[in-house]
Structure formats: structure tokens, C-alpha cells
Length: 306
Length: 308
Image: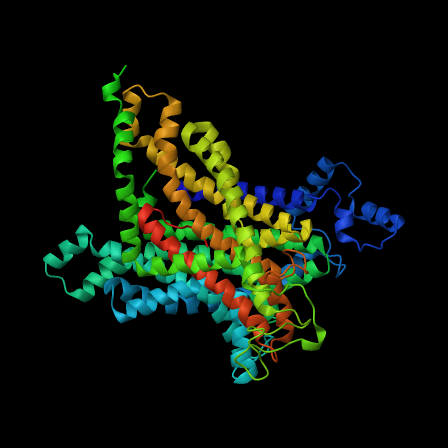
């Protein structure tokens, strides 16, 4: 178990180094990061001064080592727009994004798991058709469009929920629902197919033939097997929600990292964009690690495997 | 060395020849039985038709401005007219025509993006899977790194750096999406290499070239086509999302994402500026997902999609 954990941890550290490297070179992809960050009518003198200030005039290898050593102590440079360190600005936005993602994930589980279970246990039933239709909708409705539609119907016409901001308790309902739709569809499809698969397994037949009642079979044999892939899907999807709420946070003016990202792009504040990309990756990597651990706890085959 | 009569290739060829028509008929029967797949394929062909024949279907130029008739509602609403069934946008451009031409942008990005991603991914993944060992870990390390990162965020990051152009968008999707194809291709190659028929081909004296072209590549095509359908649908989605953020094709190009970004400003009073592009994206995506589900069932029941 410890060995499993250590090897997963090492992989995460290597991945983190990879993320830092990619983020560093992406900023220099066009050749001149100065032209990227300054307005078009900046004078050559201003450009030079900025280049000097940001240290872009040094050799790339020196810049890279400098970047890595600063990143090691949590320094990702200054935001151009705010003129202050980027990392605290990003972390300030983390709670709002996490709050949105957690509520969205809960909604997705509450919709996806029951529909997936009933669909998998009674394929072809009306509830199953509803579930399959929901799964299809979740795959094909663009979240940024759904957000606009819901604002139009529930905020502008019916006035049930506020159209933007996070100052009321019910503000979270619309953005969290939009965020949950695609994920609920993933969870639903996964649950349904796992139940279908497990239902026909030998151990379920054995359980049934030795006279166990239906409830015990469902709880002990089917649900437990659904839980394993469910945990991994939830881990992946939670990471997706943290990095993918950019449209939803922008449309609903939700004060999280996604909104900050689209603002930072508008300001051409690339140090801030870079810090956001790195920080989100770190959170996602940590989440993947936690998922792997949960997986090992749930499934003895992984714990005792190679 | 195996004699000619025992060559597995000869037998194989013979069989394919006699059953090709049967197999097509079999596929058609499978398609007809799966109503979702039939509907999906029809939906997809409607979009392709709209994109190809846009100038024939409508005489109106998607870029022609007519400020006097701006923000005209769709035909079935008050003040609408069947002359311009989907109404006009804030500059008086015909929405119906813009939706049709928008299909061109979406399908171009989806098709070429997937073509690049699949080609790159196939080559990389096949090399990793075929040679295995150190080559495999050298290639799959970076691939797994990219797959572990928050995808959308990095696509947005790169798009913001490179700037708005159709070529940039295609390249961004083509390159960032190739790791998925690489992973699937690698897994399939590994599986096929270990299979009994490849083993028997090798023991019958088949050279590497024959194994690759006669056994590995034909068996890769099914899973890759399925994956390509889903990935193309995802790319069309992401392209519209980038357009919505103002990071996709230039603002004067009539793409569904750009139209949504524009229409968002007039959401409250002129809903059709967002309704139609949104419906178009949903229609396309739904069609491709239905067709993809069917293809997956038919071509390869084992393939599971890992990421959306």
C-alpha cells in the first residue's frame, strides 16, 4: 500500500515538473512574450523597459531556471493588471470555484446515479429511456448556451433566481446546474453500463442461487462494484469542473478562477493566466492522486497488485 | 517457411472478397435496427449537406449588412417574415444564411482537427505499442502528462497566445487532441500484437511489414473511426466555446461560437441571436454522438471513452 502510494506520488511530482515546463514554454511560443503582453501602440523604448523589467532579455535557460526556482517557493511572478503577486490572487478565487464544483458534483451524482441504476437494472423501461435521453442531452447541449437559456427563462422571465453574482444563497443554483449537466450524463452512462455488466456476473448469479434477497444482492454485490468506477469518474470529473467552469463563471459572473481566467485574457495579463494554468493543474494532479488512493482503498486487487 | 497454400493472407483475402457485399448489407441491417444510430447519421448528413450546399440553399450572403432591417425576429414571431426565416442579427445580417455558413466553419475545424490528431496519434501510439519497452515509456510519459492536465484551460491559454485564426484553431485542436488517439492506438496495437492470429502469422513466417499492414492497421481502423466521431463532436463543441470567449476564428467569420458571443449582448430582447446557433451546435453534436454510439457498438464493443 505504501509502495503504491509512493510510486503514485513520484509520478505526480514528475507530472508537475512537466506542467511547469509546458507553461513556461507556452508563454514563449510566439517568440516574443513582450509583444504578447503589451498594447500595440507601445513605443520601442517602453517595450525594452518592459523586457528588462520582466527579465525576458536574459538567455532562455537562465529564465527557465529562475522560473523553476521561484515556482518552488510559490512565486509565479506578478500580475500585470493588479501589480501584485499572481498566486495569492488565484488562491483567493479558489473557494468560489470549489464551492460551485462541489454543489455541481452533488447535483450530478443525485441525478446520474439513481437514473443510471434504475436504467441498468431495468433496461428498456420508461425510466431507462428517460435516462438515456438525459445522457444524450448532457453530451450535446453546450454549457455556455444552456447557461444563457436558463438566464433568459429563470432569471429574466420568471425571476426565480438571480442572473449573476454570488451574493445570495440561491445564486449558486443555475451555474451549478449547468456545470452538472455534462457530468451527470457521464455518471449516468457509466453507472448504467457497469450495472448492466455486473448484473450478469457469476457472483451475482451465485448470490441469487443461494437465496439472498434482492436488497442484499443490490447493496453488497452490485453497488459495491459500481462504486469503484464511480469514484474514478467523480475524481476525473471534479478536476474537469475546476478547470472547465470558465464559461459558466464568465456568464454568471461567479467570482472564481474561471472568471479570473477570462478577465486575465481580456487584460492580456499573461503572468496571471500562467499562474492560473499552473495552479489549476496542481489542484487537478492532487485530485488524481486522491482518486488513485480511494481506488486502492475500495479495490483490494489494486492494493495488493504489482 | 510456410508454403503458399497455408498462407493466412491468401485465405483472408478470399474471404473478404466474397463477403464484402454481405458485410455492407449486414451493417445496413444493424444500422436500421438501431434507430438512434439511423437518426444520428441522418442528422449528421443534414449538417454536411447544409455546409456543402449553403450557397445553393440560400441566396443571401452571410456577411451582407442591412442596418435598416437589423434584429428582425424569426418568421413565426410577430414582425417576422419568411424571406428571412431565422431573422437578422444586430447588423441586419441574415441569420439563416449565417447558420448554414457556420456549419462550414464547425465541420472544417472538426474534420481537419481530427485528421491531424488521428494521424499524429496513430503514428505515435503505434510506434509506442509496437516497439514497447523503453520507446514506449519515452513516448507515453509526455502523452500521459498532457492527458492529466486540465484540457480546456490549456487550450484557452494557447489560443489566447496564438491569436484568432482558422489555421491556429485547427492546429491547436489537432495537436492537443492527438494524445487521446495515441493512447487508444497504443492500447489496440498492444492487444493485437498479443492476439493469437498475429502470433500464428508470425510463426507462419510473416515479416514485420506484413504483420503491420495486414493485421495491425486493419484492426486499428474500427476503434479509431469510433474515437474520431466522438472527438470531432467534441472539437465542434470546443471550437464554439472558444468562439464564445472570443478566442476562435476572427470576429467577421460567421461561426456558431462567434454568433453566440455576439448574440449574448442582446439576450433579453432578441433571443433568436443565441437560440439558433445554440440549436445548431446541439443538433450537430447530438447527431454525431448518436452515430458514434452506434459505430462503437458495431465496430468495437470494448472501446470505452475516457474523456469528454
